[in-house]
Amino acid sequence: MRNIQFIIFFSIVIAVFSLLNWYIFSKGIQAFPSGTTGRIWFRWVFIFLAASYPVARFFERIWLSPVSDIFTWIGSFWLAAFFYFLLISLSIDLIRLINLPFRFLPEHVSSTTFKQTIFWLYIGIVAVAILAGFINSRFPRIRILDLDISKNGGSLKELKIAFASDIHLGTVIGPRRVRAFVRRMNALGADIILLGGDVVDEDLAPVIRNNLGDSLLRLNAPKGVYAITGNHEYIGGADDACQYLADHGIKMIRDSSILVDENFYLIGREDRDMPRFAGKKRKPINSLLDGIDRTLLLIMLDHQPFELDEKEKLGIDLTLSGHTHHGQMWPLNYLTQAIYEVSWGYKKKGNTHVYVSSGYGGWGPPVRIGNRPEIVLINLQFSK
Image 1 (spheres, rainbow, N blue to C red):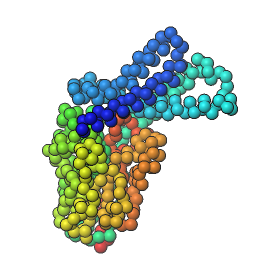
Image 2: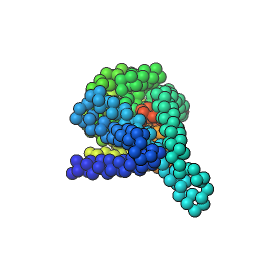
Image 3: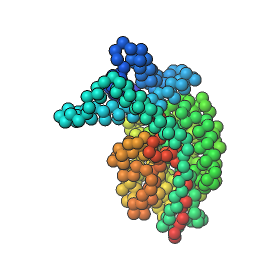
Image 4: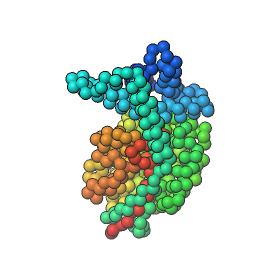
């Protein structure tokens, strides 16, 4: 039953993706007159680019190799180009629609010369945007957050947390990026390292082939390194991903709570998409708090930033999430802001501190436009 759901889901995705690519293709090919060499080249180059990402996903499952890596990189960049070409195509059609009753566009807009000029102009704009977004994605910022917790910290006067989410280890986030991530995390000198899900980008095979776990073993914090599942762990197979991470020095918290040094609790939730991909229900928040001392600091890791009101009501002191990427590519940030109470950044609800990270890596395109990847250093001070 679950395999049938996967087949139906991905069939729908491929069908929609193909139709939208055809829509973009039908707009772009108008710049080349019928029978010209340019029209032939455009057709075949477009088909290659549009097919590259599905081909890469297929190859990664049957033949993980440098060939699949090439298709993955090309396909990933095409996803970014595809998105912006789609926005441009829709905008052009909207202008044409408005022009029908008002006739404000000059006659020469329908000429081949004008279409070719616009075609190459938009190619240049999209290329520059993607290049800038790629460079931006390679330079994560360190965000420092100082918070006051109205509880007794026990033997702790303060607690330094290094937090990151959505690393997406795989082909695109490969050995060099992972080594840089580990260096940045360790350089913060935090007491504890927390990873907020989507550590692995779906398929585990590229992670194993590139031996990315060797770098993860170098993550170092006195109180340990902890992580939870995200939706991408479940897409690729959560149990295998969690076992791999556990074998490489990361303690997985799966719908449970852990008392750390008798001073504070870490509460880790399974991802919200667990029922869809694994056919199991995750535990409600209140059941995860059964039997714990609520006078101590309570830190919850929950990949998707939902149920903030319930977390406040139940007395969670600090809840950390990711998942949103804050849209990753403008203007998708407006969509995530409409879906989530907190799409990115800090918010305080009563005595509950909420932080949603924009993430360290990214899904699909290695491109960020309108926001930056980040690592968060959270300094907790105890006021009682």
